[in-house]
Image (cartoon, rainbow, N blue to C red; front, side, top):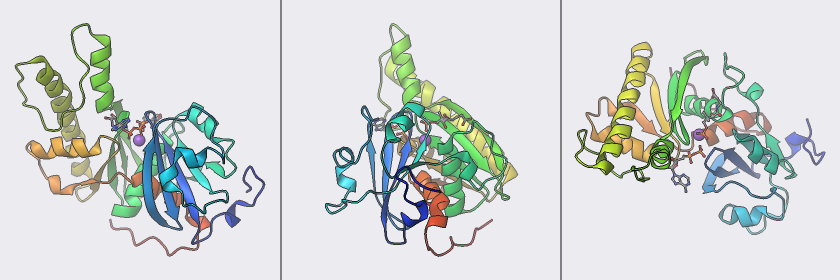
Length: 276
Ligand SMILES: Nc1ncnc2c1ncn2[C@@H]1O[C@H](COP(=O)(O)OP(=O)(O)O)[C@@H](O)[C@H]1O
Ligand SMILES: CC(C)(COP(=O)(O)O)[C@@H](O)C(=O)NCCC(=O)O
Ligand SMILES: [K+]
């Protein structure tokens, strides 16, 4: 396989090389800089407005690049936003990850690559079976069993989107930011009523999925990821907080997933044994 620049791909990444991972979500870009198999730094940036090039990469991710990084850094892209993928395609080291490369069974053809990589990353890091709850633009549940088969999942509007849609599509409701703390269940003003409705309903929904998942896979890890994961974890913990010890927070799952599908390109030690 060769890159766009015609360089054989597996000569691009060696064990100690720097390379970039880019996860393109519906709200923004998530960048990770690796040195070999080590994730050294991460950065979120707005969507691209112009094509990505060798010239503008240093301006887009100044904090990720070392000063002497003059050569073309390999860039492995996982995107759920086709227009943004197109804007990256002209970058010489770019390569887009597809579902065909994901070593999980029973994936359906339209599954988001971000979901596949995050749950792969979660399984590699915490063991299969595992359930990922990704609180991004959309909020997704993605579960994989001990045989690395996709069990199933669900998609709903993310927290930010739920707040925004009420603010934008109603005459009297304000657009609110996500609150820092879990609001009271029974509100007596508009702000808290919106916060309560969205957050307590989401918590109840999460409980439904989590309880069912643990019934099927009692020892499974459940991992929260995405831009709203920290807040979601805080809301979850502030409630009755059932079995909270087993909910992990890890916002780098997708980078672990991208690393895992890049493994053949590294001379790296095998990933630690999988705990089931
Ligand atoms: N600078 C920011 N831009 C966009 N969303 C942000 C930002 N900071 C925090 N967030 C939160 O992150 C959520 C989006 O999650 P994220 O994982 O970044 O989205 P995606 O991967 O779908 O682009 C939003 O609901 C918002 O509350
Ligand atoms: C569900 C998603 C929109 C989530 O995107 P995100 O919130 O990470 O930007 C994305 O994974 C997607 O476009 N999925 C395709 C449909 C599916 O996964 O079934
Ligand atoms: K995501």
